[in-house]
Length: 215
Image 1 (cartoon, rainbow, N blue to C red):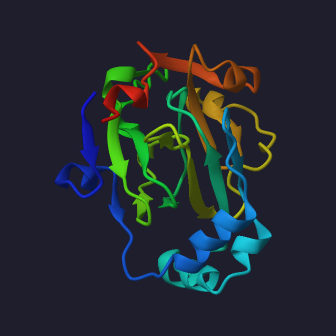
Image 2: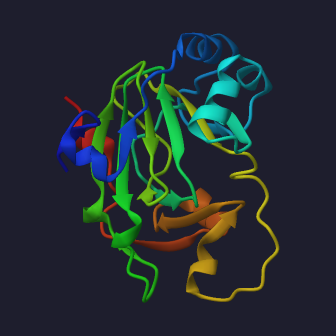
């Protein structure tokens, strides 16, 4: 797996750099009010302190066109992919630390059995202080550590995403991937926690590891 940059032309197939916003206060608040576990990754969909900052309105009204949003975070230390998820909308990642994003495309899923080959996954370097939009068609999961120090990353999504799974009657094969509100998830066989939570096992091949592209 080769390490690309979110500044490279290739990234335009997966997302775009978010420009025109000042994320300084948001990232400082993240650093001061949240923890960075050393041996796991934590995700909080919605954080009241982050959402209480003035940038909340700009992101909701400008970037999401008035759609209700939530601002949360993903912190910790992890390098394995473990799973790929997608939503019906874009997600913004704002990095306090250097991170690696392991990404693939929704179009690369084999909808005959809802599987995807691990060799479809690409690694993109997202430097500290930069924000990117990941398109709805981009498969992603938690950011990966770019070194031994771990990471803290702001996650912006439409309000309610990743909360409780709705009760549904399955209508097609894709419904087996739904694991939370607005969250379709495909896991690798090594992802024991995700599987225990009901994730569908469909990533074929070796579990991608960001350590393979560490400098």
